[in-house]
Structure formats: C-alpha cells, structure tokens
Length: 285
Image (cartoon, rainbow, N blue to C red; front, side):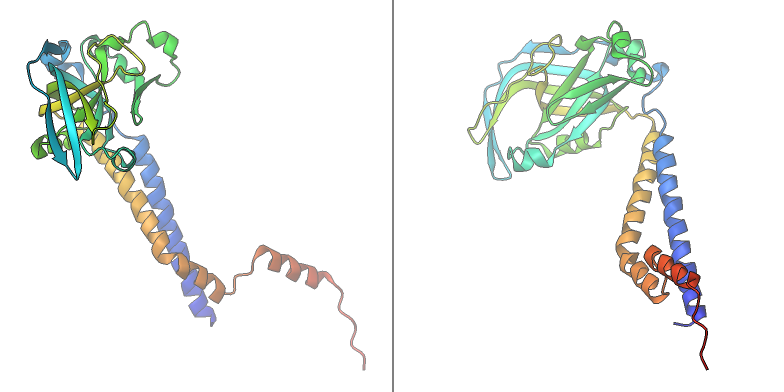
C-alpha cells in the first residue's frame, strides 16, 4: 500500500472514531440533562389528591382466551384511582416465556395525595422489578430522613390486566410523569388453570402481596408529563444505537485498515527499538 492510500485510511479511521466519540458524549450528556419528568404543583389535577375508591362488586367470575392461553378472572372490588406515574415496567419477556402470561400488560407504580402535595417524590427514585416497586432517597438524603414524610399508604404498585386492545394501547402510552386514571376490578386471576395470583385490597399494606392486581376496564391519561424529559432520553438512546450500528458495520473494515497500513503493535515497536540499539558489526573487506 502506498503512503497516500495509507494516509487516507488513517484519516478515515480518525474521523470515524471522532464521530463515535461525539455521539457517545452526546448520549451521556443528553441522559444526564434529562429534565425532571414530574409536573409542578400548579399542574397537578385536583383528583390526584384524593384517595382511590373501592366498593364490593357483584361482577361474576369470567374467562377469556389470549395468545393460546386461557385466563380466569375473579373480581373482588370495583376500583378507581387517579394518580401520578413514578415508575413503569412493561410486559416483560419473563412474564411471556416463563409464566406464559400475556394479560399482565404493565406494572405501574403510582402516588397520590400527600406524597404529591409535599413534593417528596422529587427527592426520591422509583423503579419496577418483575414484581415490586422499589423506593430510594435521592442524592445525599437518606431513607431515615424521608420515611417520616413519605406515606406508604399513598403509593401503590399496580399489575394491570386487560384483554381489550384499546385499553392495552392506552396503557402502553403511559410514561413516568403522566397523570392517569384507572377504572376496573381488583381481581384474582390464573393462567391455564395454574396457581392463582391475588391482589391487595388495602392501601396500607407493604411487602409481598401488597400490589393491586387490576383488570382494567378504562385507562385514561389525564395529563402528560414533561415532554422534554422524553426528548432528551430519546436523543440518548438514538445516539447509542447509531454508535452500535457504526461498530457493527465498520468493525471488520477498521481491523482490515489497521493491517493494510501496517500499524505496528506494541510488541513490534519494542523489538524494532531494541534492534536499533544493537551496534552493527563493521563491514569486512
């Protein structure tokens, strides 16, 4: 390979590396600068300050089929809640494959009432695992500082069930920071006559079994959260995807370019330098 070709390849590699570095830096900055998704107090709708309503139902047990599985729903109470979404878990691979559960559309961790009034949620982080909603104090604060202010009875983790395409679509659109209303049935349910999964019927319980299992009849996003938070998060994800695509496309080419330009490795450089330090034998005539 001539010097001009080698220089062109070297410049190409540097440009590609620089572009990738810029995209990664942009992704990290965008992720860091995500704006707080929660609305200000003035934007909170009045219904979110009220407790959920729960009354006994005479709705009979019912069954339905979905994606080759049969589901049995046992309604216990009519239930309605208006709340702020603080964490969400979409219908997971684990639920679909291991539990063959195609009816648990999502888990929503939500707050209402005093937990919104006192702004405590903005000093905390929330996350959903397969079964639970976890709560942690944010930054330098500790849970001991938070627990006297935060009210467990104003938080619930909701397993949302539905066999209605429109309801499922609305649930999928909900994001952290949205103000939502759920109307449905607190229910027990089972899949393919397997073990029955229950529901909490109290807002004051905690730990295992404290989640509300709701067969959703109506799901409404009353007001969206801060849209700029989603935009920055989307920019970060797009940039990282672009970097991964570039690596997949140009990996072989970059390796090949390195071979063609004859770029010596560390070992080769060391041996070459060592060779040059050895005195050359005088020529004999």
